[in-house]
Length: 426
Image (tube, rainbow, N blue to C red; front, side, top):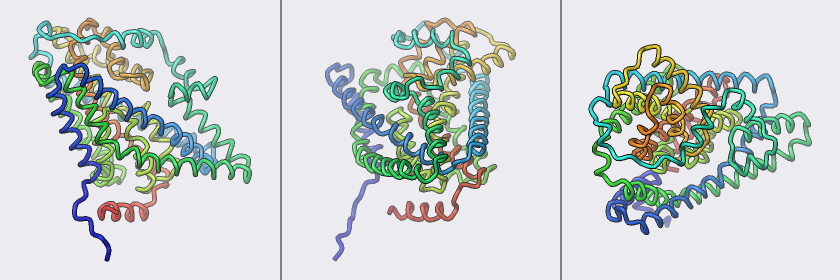
């Protein structure tokens, strides 16, 4: 007789339980440096395990996907289409953030001088570098002089560039290239298996990371900036469930079905505030959902640099919030300039630690906000980062399906079978 499992907690619920336990532990060990350090180390170890998996998956899947595509004209078309889509969505996110800030005026309800500042020295040097780097620096940074150095630093764009060329080269040598694609396919399958093992530790990693956040900040420190946090999350929710849903409908994507498929990955991204934590399973699920391997392996890693909708919303909201708090009136022209500056700086800073905060540091001085103002919202950056990371993950999954459908590389039969099996819990 087959043994029946009467009770099974899904990964999503395990992560939520980890989140709740983390909040409790953080409150219990509030300002306890030893406990916070232990939780920080456990959380860092989990994120490091995810980072260990990401690059082998990206390189193997992208190289095989491009090799199977084998057409440089098609690749160019997909690349251009993807980047245009990303630019439109992030610009739309920036504009929505600015409109919401103008309507709600969150900065006018706060006494900026009554807030307690936080240390932002870790971001300042990077932001100063960002101000002096232009479009040419960004473009030149895409081409790696040493691919192994790029792998060591985890620079995604040079790795994507190399993998695309390596995939095209593999396709050009015909039958000999099949050896390479077979090996890399095996590597991808092994890494996806390892991902499943690592994901079992996700609730522990989430518990530790949330515990650190609550343990360092406590709930009292959130009260003065509660309205800003609430508006930021409401704006992000509007962008996901209204704007993205409308865009999905426009391209005949079942958005809410897609959201249900990736809900575990969104929860993981939210609770860890790390897009990388969700990347391996995202790539696997988008292929299972019906998108071709080539599209998935190109769009998702590229989106982690160019399609940061949640970050764009936060940056525009935070910039105007600080301007309002300092009673700095921005004209329409200045706000349009802010949109353009954010469009450029957000692309240049993607991939650096604390990217969204660094973009703010590199941007707010252009609208007259003192750099000291950033110290007042640095304390809640991690909390808001959770929301914007989740939005980024949803945006990249939607982009993958839209690009796949536009290239007629989306398998509806595969989607139906996967959705049916996912619903049954197979």
